[in-house]
Image 1 (cartoon, one colour):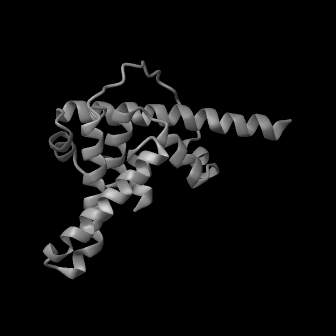
Image 2: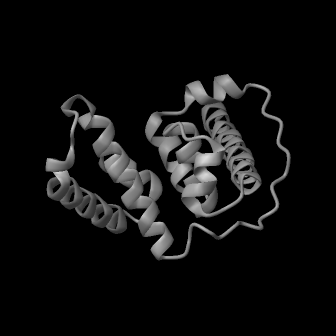
Length: 156
């Protein structure tokens, strides 16, 4: 569950606060769980909702990054992904602007639809799609840059 908190919060201390707040919510509301088989999904949803609520409280989820995103063609996209460790990919996701990171996490990792994301974050579906597009482009650029660094270091 800590990984969920870390994916949504940019700061480790804030992720720990969200983690603690979510666990308190789980324990306080455990009696409300009607289907014990759904425990895992129920807990995951509480952690996601707690992180999103924290973002809303800080009014950061609504910021749309105006940074221009250049089109970068990554010829060996799959090869680049294969060469990156999971922790490197998670760091790249953590470095995305808040709006992009939140939409990326909700859509790609947690399986939300754009309609659900729009409702949850109080944005339009178009904004959700745009944030996802920007997140993917920024990740492509970061992965491409990371891959080039590895190639450059290896060739020395």
